[in-house]
Image 1 (cartoon, rainbow, N blue to C red):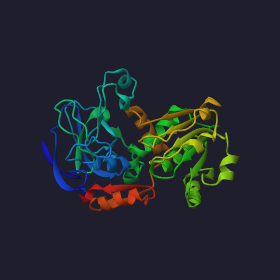
Image 2: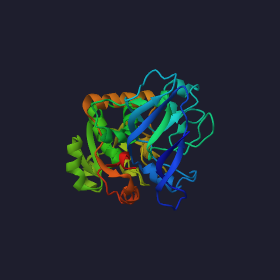
Image 3: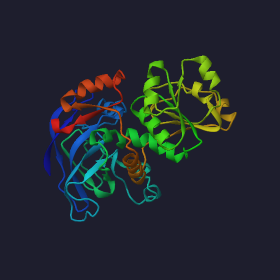
Image 4: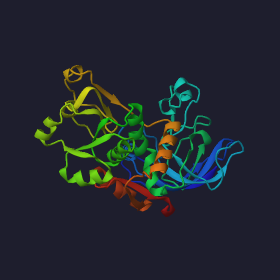
Length: 347
């Protein structure tokens, strides 16, 4: 084992502070990574504060990790020292269930191992995230980062990126598809970029008229202000797919009116109890409300490769690790365009 600098929380009410964690010695299939940058996800904040009731302490957040390979185990064949790599929200799975064999390790029947707040499947030790100087990850869960991408701006692709890319791909969004992206935040701005890259006609749906110009700069063809009742009525039945990225509890009823027949509203941001809605809104047009998490390893690599080809990255604000608690506070106020990324050289 090696002592590694990290920032994390020791209790639900504690601020994040520096301490040391142990990273395991290399196994044959392991890749050791010197972390260069780590994105800051809303899930990091929720988990640090034990909002979901299952956080183990001490806790180190961070699952939007990019860095450089520093060493590899004897059995590693895909990577070598110096390679640019990335790690997302999971670092292992059972690898033998039907979901894993189909490339959907994220939906592992036996439960995937989270990059943080998980347990190593071999020795039971806790997994710690990317708010740290280094990490050791099994080769099948390490992704290749295209050299053409800015490393800092690529970090949020590992969660915000794949969380929006996966449902767009899985619901066959492409040329001729009318897509609405609800909410222009860390997830929403990536949803706009990916829907546009896949060839869809993209509308940014927001409560704030002031975000219209930003949305169009990101690639949106249209902007729909959801507080404008006349505009919402005029948009009735005008979308095939709605990507709902809003991270707090909200009523989906107004958006269901926007779906055309056999349209789908997919929730990727709200992780809590949903307000009820009338089932007739679904029956009258064979509409669906669905949900989606991150994608599997193969799909995440596919996304990174597309980003490399088209120059897609997140819009970020780079911060030193010492500002992480302030960043959490700003994130709660939605005071960020559109994703914080920690420069781990500051650790």
